[in-house]
Image (cartoon, rainbow, N blue to C red; front, side, top):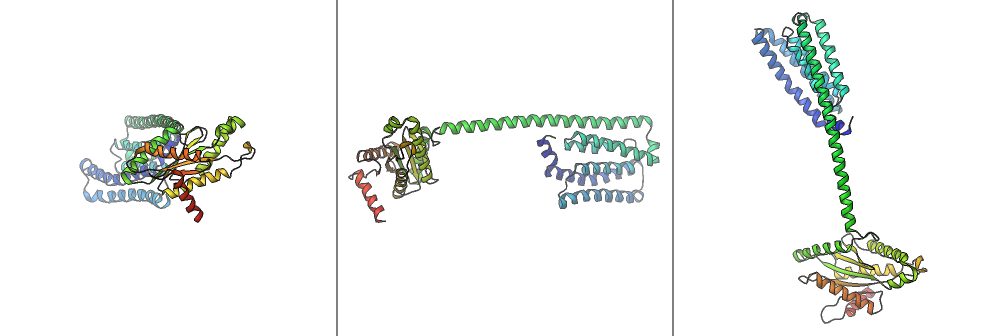
Length: 381
């Protein structure tokens, strides 16, 4: 059976609802019997009361047993529900064997079998109905007297028609749910492709870092948060020193290897709250959040030192160095000022010998003096 149909047929909610329906059917059946006996048969209350009580006890016992198995043993069986339908219909027929239309109640278990969405169970329910009707006909003289040949033909036609309708409904349900499954799978596949395409559009293919466009989008959102909630924010721009020489000397394929390794070192060093992107060429950018300027500086220095200590076989076991410009965002200054400060610090690092981290100075101080104060603090620690 289709997996979705199996889940639908065996779901505990559906099974529980069917059991509740059977419990509701008990008083309705007893009321129906009472009406039939009083209005059509003209039986007295004393005559019909014992049979009504017996019928109610029988149906309650059968339903209670199935409910107990469901609650205590977690047993869910389509055949139990079908058998309960046959018991309900049989009790009504035995109580009213002289009313020709009563055997029509055997369509109830056939209709119950539709909920299984299983053609074999529907066919099995149909066969059980024919068997039970034959047994009742055989052992109930009153039923044999009532059922004329025309009645027999009509009843068998009714059972067959109900089974045919049940099979048709099950086939339609199977087709519908198969179509739904295919549509769902197609939708999920499209969603996955969309997610992949969206991810690829945000990532740099070589380094697996965020790209230039995504970096600016994210930075703008963080600046908005800084303006609203005073979120601490620092920007570091990192540039590989003498990268053109590496490409010219060892080849661009080696340059790509160095870019990948630098990206990996940056990602491994920063915290989960930080945002790393390949800004372009040999330049990278890191947005530090929820940190002081001192903490952002220490992480930048750690990135620089780890790269300096890494020997690259492709560079004849030499290291590649990196220069870093660091700028803290100041409320109300905007993205342009943040970039200008980080860029100016990066150029200061390049001009003063490379392989260092420079923090953008406050007005009246040089970038290098600001950096030296931190270096002094680091040495003291």
